[in-house]
Image (tube, rainbow, N blue to C red):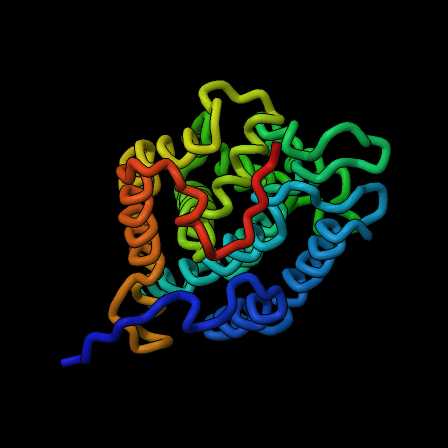
Length: 298
C-alpha cells in the first residue's frame, strides 16, 4: 500500500515563479503530446508575459494586483494538470484541443490590460466586462499571437466559460463542453489554492471598489463573502463542471506518487483558516494575513 504523504503545492515548484511554472507545464505537456505542438503554447506564453509587463504593442502593463501574471500562471498550470489527469484516466485527449485549452488559459484575463491611450484608473474598472474584453483582445491580436483563423472561435468560446456572472458554457456540447468546464475549473482552483490567496483577496477588494461592484464596503466584507460563497463555488465545481478538479489527483498520484489532490487540500486549508479569521473578534484581521507585505490603502 502506498504510504500517505503530507505535501503542499509549493513543495513541487514555486507557483509564483514564471520560469518554474512554464517549465513544469512544458514537462507535463510532454507526457502526452509533441514538443512541436507546445511551441504554439510557448509563443503565446511569451506574448502574454510581454503583455503583463508592458511591452506588448498598443498596451500598457498590468496594474491589477489580484488579476496579475501570477494568476495567469496558476490557471495555466492547473489546466495542464487537469488535462494530464484526463489523459491518465481516460486515454489520449485530442492534442489540438489541449493546445487551444492551454492557450485560452493564458488569454482568459487579457481584458484587464488597458490600451496605451487608456490612462484613467486601472484595469480593475473592467471587472464586469473583462471576459468580453479578453475575447476582443484575442480577436484583435490573433495574428500577433500566431493563432490560426479557425482556432479563434474555439479559443474565445473557452474564454467565455470563465465568466462567473452568466453560464455561456451551456451553449457548448460534447468535448467543447468538457474543455470549457476544464478551463472554468482551473480558473477557480488555480487562484483559490495560491498560498497567498487570502492576502490577495484584499487586492481583489480594491479592484471591486474601483469597478463599482456593490456589497463591498470594507476589506473585511470580501473575506466574509468569500467564505460564504465557497460552498456555492464547490457546488458549481461538482455540478456544472463535473468535478473535473478530481482529475488533478491522478496527476499528482502518477507523476509525484502523492495520493492526494493538492489543489483541494490547499483550498480546504485556506477556507478553514479564513473561518478562524472571520470568527475572531479582535478585529485585527490584517495581522493574520502575513504571507504578503500588505500595505493598507487609504
